[in-house]
Length: 351
Image (cartoon, rainbow, N blue to C red; front, top):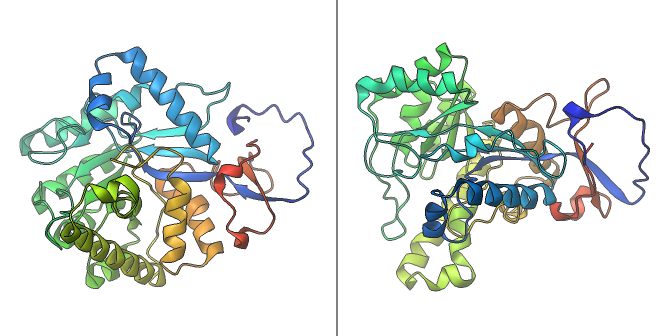
């Protein structure tokens, strides 16, 4: 596999008879400092930089094996994924890592993602992250979805004026903003503030989706962290009442994503890998299948996983498309036409 930025244009010819050639897949939301297996063990590993870097190398190898050539990391308090951003894997620079460093937060949810801050610290915090070379700003606009009470989400962390200030500060440094928002109030506040993408977005209303369509705000719905709790050992950890809440939450989410897609809201593919039960690379095919199950056509899901996600992550035009005169970053999938729903794990090469 060859990083397109390092290709020597040697003219090597590949015989791809029987394969489908696609632009490399992109994951818009991961957490490389977490392994998706054991949250506590991941946090303990943070005190051993060598162990962290080894873990990240392995996670990126799993990611690349799934055909994912670029990821956007949603941050960690130690900025470990950011420090690993330039690590080269298997002799290449793939997968390309877009890093937010750490998340901006006040109190409540997300202590592992970023340190608490006061509203007066916002301009300095954004400037400090920008000076270190982050790629995008991550802000926690809300808490997380409850699996015990349907429709309940942790409270807003920032007031509207504070979110406005965060987005304005990011723009002043030429940075996009990705906003963790899992309630309609949080989504709407982030959209009005000028966030470039909404992460998760559970319980968003149709009215807010119309606003997102009008403003061109992207949505990364991250089905897998919720849907995975309905299967296997994860399911056994929940009561029947909780399973009913999770099922209802998940099904509504699929309906709203289909509605958003019909409105031409830019939708990206993000797994939230690193979250409990969400494995890096291995969860990507599941996320694609969940989009298909939501009613989106196969070819359009491929477009979301490539070109649309490249725009959201800021990795276009090198990633996400193939066109004359551009460097090529592609995957070859065994089995022919993409409507056969072949798994991304059949990746053959990336050049």
